[in-house]
Image (cartoon, rainbow, N blue to C red; front, side):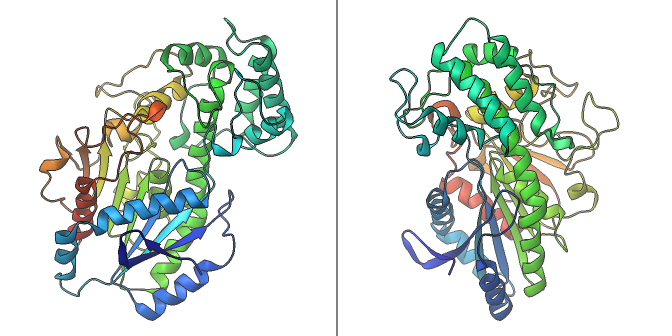
Length: 420
């Protein structure tokens, strides 16, 4: 069974459902979840999606921390229970394969100390981030082989540039959410040499000649988030709405999980009650009537606005301390070119986790301090500056994962209550 306990809260539990890269559920735990929803008829259903993540234990730890943060907001929980109709909740966390770069499975491999796992094993694991089949394996083998000879040459060797070009062509995202400039491996490599601090994930360095792999992985996972949101996540939300017809469904995402949550909202049977987007690795123009510099192209999630698919509030957290979004989003989009700005004063390619939701045709409310937010108006998009709270420096990601704060928990509750 999928039920998980929340640390420190014996009265709170959630369901953890596991999906593959194609959006297909692994196992049949959702069958039990839907049966419970039909029997219990909850008033409020929460569907949560992580972003960059590792394995199921990592997802379990993250969801436990998120939900515990909300559960610790005692006054807000009591307020919800006093609302007309009461408050009977069901919580569902979604796990989807979204490994980024250099996770723990690569062990203590280091190009400085010599690989502790076989080179072919390393090649296979890195290639799995970027696609299936022989093409990514051959390309990554070329890049890794060159890195073993010289981890940081002055310029990328021609065969490495060609290998990166091959990887980029394998999985192009032509949607508006995937908009970016053509990938330029050499410019990206040089930009990473300037931007990067020395980094090591589990002892394995993805700096130097391997740094552009991080950028390609960024766009691979971004596309996967959208496809998963449109398939497995959206199907689950529709099924939950069918089983609990009067329930208010609340979507919450972090990082690429914001794309999952937005896509699931777009695919729901009826409008959802609230949408909480924490440090989103999604385009700041996602809801815009027109994307600057791309005439005739609307934001990929524009229908959420035009079709009023969120009854309550949509809120977006922002922090200038989020390096994962602030650095790798524009770096990947521009492939090392100088970042240009639209007429509105925001980058043409940038993420909501730093800039919020922007553009034309959106009812936006800007909040300059998360601690001062008293309520969230329904039917509007709220950009909430959380730099005073979301500020931890966690290596190359900066404060990207620093979301488990009481102020953030209270903001989610305000979104939940906004539609009531």
